[in-house]
Every structure is written in C-alpha cells, then in structure tokens.
Image (tube, rainbow, N blue to C red; front, side):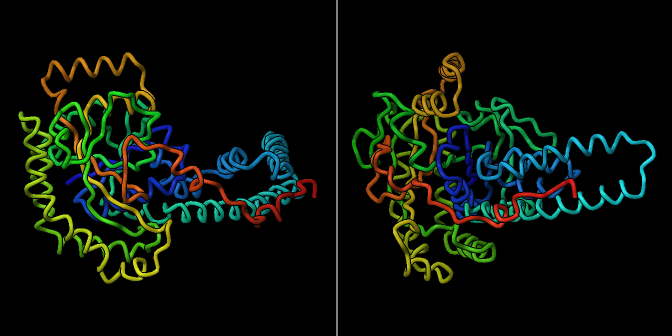
Length: 389
C-alpha cells in the first residue's frame, strides 16, 4: 500500500497541520508514503534555515517577518546589507572595521537564532516537527510535480497524469491510494454532476459516482511524539497484517481491473467486515489510549475509504491546484483513449465529522479555522539592533 498526499497550491488556505496529519496517517497504515507539493517546503524548512551564508538566511528572515510588527528589525536588516556591501568593497580593512563586522555578525546571528527557534516551534505546533526524520529514514518520500513548477535535483518526479494512471508508476503503482482532508473536497471544487454516495448506496456501482465508507475514529497523530508514532506504526503493521493484505488486493483490483465495479464488490465482501477491527485498534492500542480517553473535539478524526471518479478528480485539480481547462480536457481525452476513464481511483478521506457528506459544505468548518491571537514573541522583544554601535 502506497499513500500519496498531494498538497496543491490552495491547500495553503487551510491550517498546515492538516497535511502533517495526513502524512503521519499514511506513515502508520501504509508501507510507503509519498508527499508531493507544498508540504515538502515545510518539512524541509528548518533544515534549510540552518544552512547557507548569513546574508542568505537574513534575507529569508526579512521576507518572513510581519512588516508592521517587525518594522524596525526589517529596517535594521536592510541597513545591515547596505553597510555590509560597503564593508566588503573595502580592500584594506582597519582593525576597527574588522571588529565592527564581527560584532554586527554576532548580533544578527543571535536574533536569527531566535527567529529560527520560533519557526521551529511553529512547525512543531503544526505537526511538521519530526517529519524530516521520517524522510531521512525513507519511510516518507518527498517527490516533486513538474506541473507545479517544482524542480529539485535530489527529488524524484511524479506527474499529474500518474496520479490518475497508476500504471505509470510501475508495479508498485497498483497499490496507490490518494489521501485527502474533507476540506479539500469541498463544493467549490466540483460541479453538480460530481456525486459522492455511500458504498452501500445502490448508486455506488454507477461509475459516474464517487463512493466512500466509514472506517475508523483516529486520535490526532500530531499529538504524538516520533517514538510514539513509530510504536503505533509497528503495532499496526503486525496486528493489522491480514487486513492490510486485503486492502492491497482491493487497491490492485481498483487500479488494474477492466471491470469498473469489481473493486467495490470486493470492498463490500472483504474490506467492510474488517473495518471494525481497524477502529478497535485505534481505540485500544496502548500508546493511543490516553489520547482516546482524554480526547477533545479537535483531537479526533474520522477515516473514510472509497473511490473517486476521474471526472471529479479532474475538477478538483482544475479548481484547487489549479490546472487549466486545456490540461483538464487533454487528460480526459487521453484517459478515454486508453479506456481507463471510467476506472475510479482509491482514496482515503479524513474528516472531523462522523457523518460526512460530500462534496463538503465549508460552512460546517467556518468556526474551526479561526486563527488564535498570539502572545508577544521573544523576537518582538528583541526586534531592534542598532548597527551603528
């Protein structure tokens, strides 16, 4: 089972912790998790902030700071660049000039460290704190999508077409499943013909409809330490081995079968009866018991499993990535010629709602994503450095 979490451009409209949770869930329940898109920037952020020359890092800091809250710090950094440029042009520097350069570099190193610490805290709070470690362990893989303009020499590429056509990814592509938060699958990204029904609905066998089914309640993995998350992953791999094997068979059928309804029939007969065991695992696994027993409304998610039509997914990318109408039509025509347009694509959907209806009405969440006011930070207290001293 290979989970693909694609954080497209418009996912940035919503809290970053959503993507962190999707990646951690993929890490727990799958053999391989692939992160594509903007979440990769947050995973790599702290590592990148600690590398490179001071001038480069200060430019990143200056571009990130709030222009009103940190106006004096921004101006101080700007003046630093002006005077540093003048300093670098001096061929024969006096001892006083050298001492000034050492002193001012030291001062800015100090304020930069405070800013990096704050960014690290932000990423930790959003759930990205240790994801880079999982990347280093190769349990999560970062990939770039050329259509988004990302080009990294050290990353593999995954094309938009391959999201729809698992065979492009080689033998392992047959076990692909896309993962979404329900806010991404909101009504703004679909049209009236994109219908989502429950798996037990007779209309679920109609390949013009997407379908989904409730699987389990899950505490927020963003609350877990890296060690705790590893323990949960290892326990799931061992205890849910038989269920994982059945899910892999379903994914293979969904991604390869020439019958458009064989996969949902297999799901009903072989996956549905096993789903209570998955729910029981997440409710009773020792490491998770505290979070289950002391859960709050914002600490529990609900997992759904299903299949989405290519038509609906093309509309999703049209509105949410976004791609052009021309790209959408080109892919649709290509899939029709290949005879795979009616093959639906396996998905995992995460929601805060136990009774999910799709496409989602975003009004349900309008109070959940309110940004809290923050206390004054340490950087605000040290927001000004006099570079003339």
